[in-house]
Image (cartoon, rainbow over all chains, first blue to last red; front, top):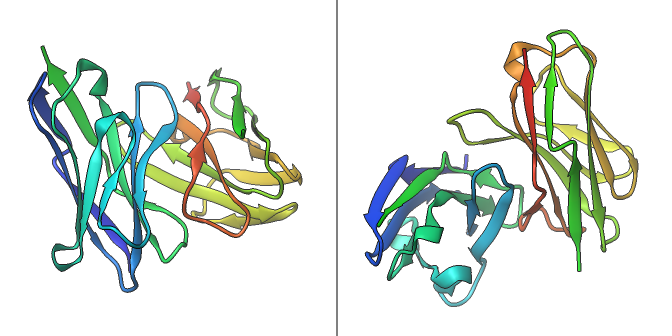
Length: 112
Length: 113
């Protein structure tokens, strides 16, 4: 069975600091991997996705993620946090293009 | 470009009352459509998905039902709401033939009192 684990339900960083949101997955077949962002009382917005090819994926708003097969990880990073990055972030896995399986989410707070 | 609409945006309903939430997609044909629920402090739970008109797959047995009367319309219903039905309901779509890359609507906040 496929699953996604997001380490840390809440992460707090200072403005300008590195953002690192952790995601590990388990999948019996090569996975497609996704990060979504959700601002308060809004729907989810796709940040980036990995399907095949280059393992470092760049997304919107300066975020990127790296697929590491040996570590079964797909951590999300951003070099410098902005106040506007405060939101909830969801990692998701799709087993070879099947339905999405979401992690529990990580709430990111950015301190001035 | 494609857009997805949900209404109403917020809804307060008494226990035992019926429910109808609507989702429509514009700018694409034969999309796959999804209903998710997000309870307070919890992740997303897939409730139903549909790959075509009249084709509904239920992921979790519950007090809700879904229907797809038209290609780009997806409706979530209940005959009698429970307190546990409160939550944030999200509709999403993906391109025909693909279940993975999903695009979400703005959501409906349902409070059952």
